[in-house]
Image (cartoon, rainbow, N blue to C red):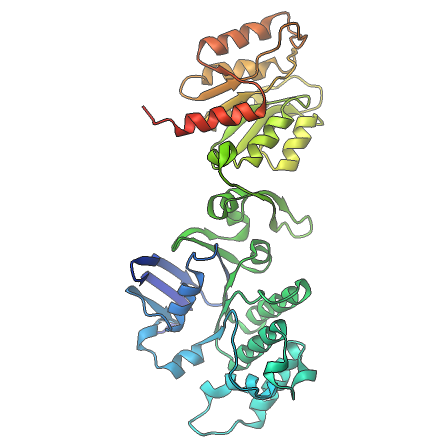
Length: 430
């Protein structure tokens, strides 16, 4: 029964099959009225299929979909059209109708059979065309428009439909960056000013984070993340779902998260360790930088520290978005920083000691690692013979020997480290 508390859109245990392939696996999802939801996921993840279930175009093999408390399968087509408007990824018009007539198609759900459009309907069409920047093309045929202009015409048609729910499938796919921002600004305004609920399938995670109140990520027909953009958008999500390594940044003006993708993970040792972690790196003085970058590039989840502010490895970690235990510049590691270091070490599955110089101020890093060797993979780069990196009167050397005695494994460069991690990951658990 429809009521003020009914979700604008609800999926309950929705499953869809295409022959032997399962496109959607038991989707449960509620969209409250007035919310803007960004539906994200790779090609083939089920975004379009989920939207088509909501529209009644694809009946589910199991479960049900509801529009404002009514089952989609119980609503006549005209009743669905009064509740939900649809902007498909693309549409190929059969006739070269004038653009103003094409937009007026959106009013048919509000007209009786054979009833002509009113002056008010025509004014709505003119207003919608002006709002999407196509007022000067109103008398041209729809086939004369470019792909991007036709996408804006589809939005205008949906706007005059005046449905309380708007579904969009890749609405920005044919638009340049300026028109992408313009279209999504208009969609957002529809929600804010008219209370329209919006669910938009988007490929661009950064656009989704910028415009959506909530991100729902699909992968292989399942919901793998759901929540506010600040909680959902992450380098780990991009790696896990898309197989892409990225850096997470924040817009300094709005705090909105955005991703800077820089490579696709494919095969080899780096690909074999994607998703591993947390890997905690004991770094300092620039010696840890190559290991931090290599592990991040390979898709590992990385932490580091304890480091002093202004240390070059601390700056590298900040640039890579790596959580770090930090101490004041040139100060020995205090109790609070050591406690934070112990937290990071306790969370780590793998610990790496980079070839750092050890002095009285950072000796505590090695001291804190020793108790964590049991039950974890621990790798260290041993000091080379004659390398004057121990400024502790031999105490650091004794700690290295204790690490080795407890089972820590010596390694060389970052490539060897990645190969060792990959080999340990591939080895069956005892």
